Image 1: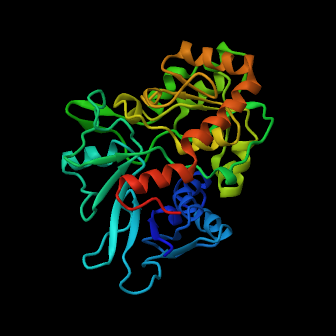
Image 2: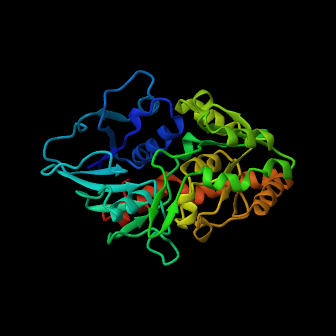
Image 3: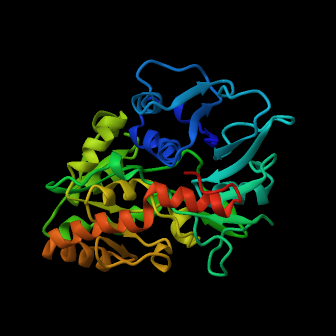
Length: 356
């Protein structure tokens, strides 16, 4: 019998976020690729026309439902991969709810601080913070048995594309959660890391463009970005739909990924789903190290940096042998991040079978 799976997420309330649409949809599309009958469930509100996640799922033929539960034969047990606990598990449902953490650090610290319990009602726990549970990772495990995984990328949806002139990324300057303080340490947003690397364009011969969600009130940072040679574009204009987001990534030369302070300071092992889209597209990724270098080979296609000097050296290394890094990028995506492999392995580790 073909397995049935739900993917829960709050993507349908972000109509202009193409990257978020891909981040959530990759789980549903990847499951469909391994033979599951899949539906995406969002707790609501009702769909708006032009919604990025709904449009992507519809184009791929994946069912989606709002403010309810997807239709499956009565009494049949299904699995809910519940991204950030968006869908409240209901007692009595014939559903095995698995919490899927794609913002490592936040739900765990909130739980320990008594601010929110996103884990209640779930039978299993998955995180893309691949270092959680290790002694050098500051994120508490909350007494839970975490299954770690990279995010999935659907390779056939992200074919290699040659060319591109600028190092780019699509990012938010400050996350909506604010700073979290735990055990005397404060963990912040991307802004708290990016300022360390703001001089990078002045140090290397390369173009840099940021599709950056930054408030106009951030006057000092905006002036510093402009003065140091960063070209800024509106992410809603260039990546507001799933199609536009893919086009933007694939028109890039490479990605420069500066991570949130939360991911870096905790040494979480987080690796962005966005970076995997660049890799699959044959675009080299130069990413701030969150501890992912402990888990994956770096140096060709995927390069890690921790200091401004290392970031500059990474840019120069990519430019010296660009085509080699492009080939290595796609090869890494195929070997380590293919949704078919990632999700089959994940389901097996959860005791839910491999799918087909």
